[in-house]
Length: 237
Image 1 (tube, rainbow, N blue to C red):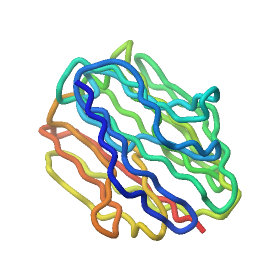
Image 2 (cartoon, rainbow, N blue to C red):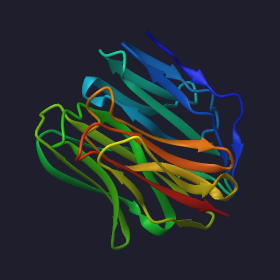
Image 3 (cartoon, rainbow, N blue to C red):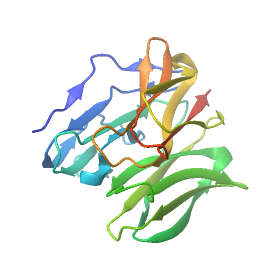
């Protein structure tokens, strides 16, 4: 069953407009076009639950000039969500997606760190605690890093390259059993995104960047001791 919730009000950060969160929940397969028509917008995943039971991804369809949330799931508890940012102080150029797949440890260089923001845009078959994906900075670059024991595992990231100045916060990481929450950043200062995940595999395991009043908040629930849910924020100017 498809449940696509659109919260009523987008929020205005400093220099960017952040969209509602668009959420797919339940069993099904297909895509939903997001009502974000700005070709200079950037969309990224903001919530994940039970990713062992399906896949979730974002792509920009140039034919209709819109972002699409693509999904395939076979469990009612499955969930993925996305938000978009637009109207930032200057154009936003979005890079091609880097996608890591399969068993073993893999890495991909993404973009220059002091000019861009990189976030999750794809996830599939996060089967157990061996499946892990993280977006980290190494030297001057963003790097996407994964570890997995599953041949159909996947995680992907795109980056938004900003013309205006940005600054990044330190990652906040919630681990082990839940529920847990952590306050991240005032909405008026910028926006936040998921940057690390591990063990998103059962119906109880969830990780989400959400709004709580005037602040961004990282929220998780887990029945696994090695669960990881991380987020970073970007201050826009």
